[in-house]
Length: 340
Image (tube, rainbow, N blue to C red; front, side, top):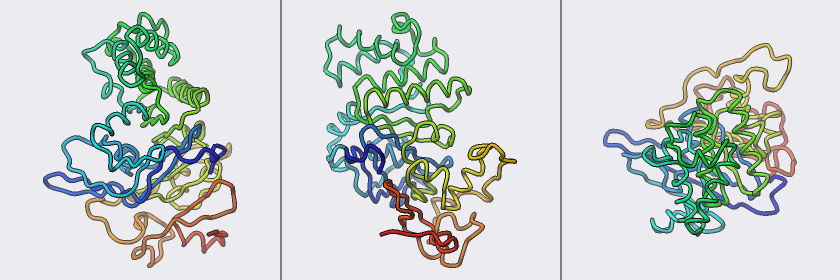
């Protein structure tokens, strides 16, 4: 595990399968995937849009798309408690207090009809057990901590009166209002300019360091991963293709999909990079999945067995943080040492 491994996982998902149903189609959004994160650690879950990152992370918490039926199986534990067997009331309490979520679109969490400050204060009263006076002070403090200037004034502003960057900071303040132990950041820098993106990432890193909370970063932004992550899980078509320390995954990737992701990022691993390379093809239709490796149709190294057998995650290398890869073809071709 990471430098924080002595704490043990605080949020852990194993063998998760999530099927989403509409009146016309069923989609296997997550297929036997899992992850864990420890207190004080930042886990990045990486993959293309539609790979299942958000559904895998937020699905066990009941935060799934509206208008679809859900069949969810597997194991999910928060601080050792079985989430999937919880009553709706207990799950709602856990979701509001134990977990804080920074959503991709702040307006999906902030009520546009209410002023920002009272929304934060209500969250602090409900889940942190503060009085009305204490909750107001806490809300102003959270706005200030999140880098919002003149927090007393912003307390009485409506969401539409703030810029995109300030809205995302308010979203972070709302996520922290219940004093969570796990902070989930779902594409927190989407639609922000580069300067504001860097500020938001620095803020999340500062909060993680100061509070010692676990952070899960859901993203397709490799730059954000390199800034924040201790460990990385690479997700493809609802399955984990590779996982390990950020150093191992970003500088010594093994799975062809991980290598393709990194090759598509300009100047990421080398100052002398000459260009980028797109991954050929498109992700599989998860409503019509075939057996075998999900990446087979896009892989330049595909072998016949790749289309018939699902590759298991195998530990490679002997580092203190397990580095696991689901590609026996590369492991064999490159003579990579595996470990039980």
